[in-house]
Length: 310
Image (cartoon, rainbow, N blue to C red):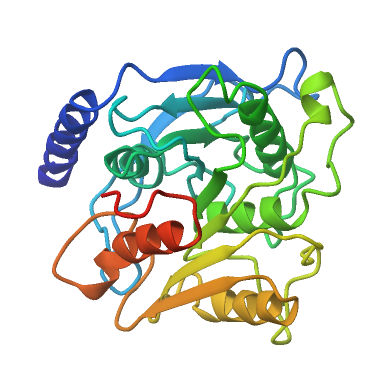
């Protein structure tokens, strides 16, 4: 009960931080009609709490709010205060093993951080859990359809939402980190049949930030997992991992970094010693909590944020 109260207090604090800097978030449906590749109803969307885990497995041990049974994908747009808006935007992909979405820790809290540096945070509510034809040992395929559609839709409406269509990135955590890299490397192959004019617009993110990603490494060798490839013109990538992550070992990011470098894709890798999984963007006295500062520096150096902005 104490941990639930702590989580509730955190939600209040997050809400206050967000409301001080931004207007009410806008929720937009991804698909204009029937969602592609869906046939069997899965029931109503649900909110639940994550399991409490120990420090050996995760950095944030208390329960946080999750979403599951998502069959109607959306994007939720959190815009920064007008005077701070840099025009840069990021699609946010919460993790959850393609079973759930860690909506609070790896969605809402990330949007608050992005707004604080003048970036529009756009949480992608992609389809979970895995459908019966999506094996547990492999990434689910439908979320990539949702992320590709999201990039095209955001670019289509960028002017309306105060976004520069040439500065739209993607950040993801755990399974969402896999989704971020998959989106950044598969933009040249649409994974669904186009449904309208929006799908004629590029779904290539301008940069990608996978954070403690999974599903990137082949099971039996030090190479990218089957199904991942580095496309020509893959955008710059910033990788973050915990050195003691036993849920998604750091080799996942190391293999990806090496593959990107071999393909001459600009990439930066940060592996933090003594750090487990699920640290999100929360700050503490550990070096890993400064990854967001290093990331903002990388964004400025790459021209995705104004130099001198804070």
